[in-house]
Length: 96
Image 1 (cartoon, rainbow, N blue to C red):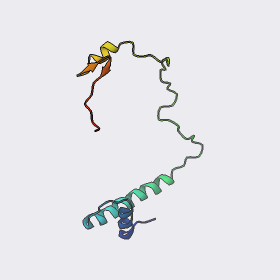
Image 2: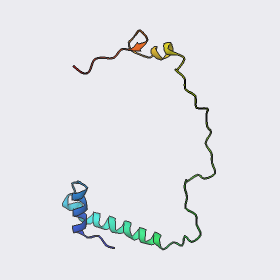
Image 3: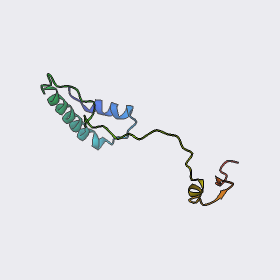
Image 4: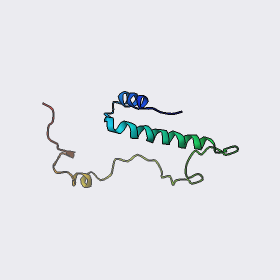
């Protein structure tokens, strides 16, 4: 498959990308190079190779116990607030 200038202009229009006329021909070359690389990948023999589900198979991530807490430290949390009142953050009104 080969991409021409007409196809590049159409793709740019469909993608709503402003593509200056000076960039059309270089884009044709770039996209044709990408397609040639993909064709080269299609020639690789993958018979008997299992698809990967992860780049790091066999590694398990440590899990922590999933328990709900209320934070147990409202004073420490509110200490970071610029302004607090009755145990709540005070923020400026943004809607009239």
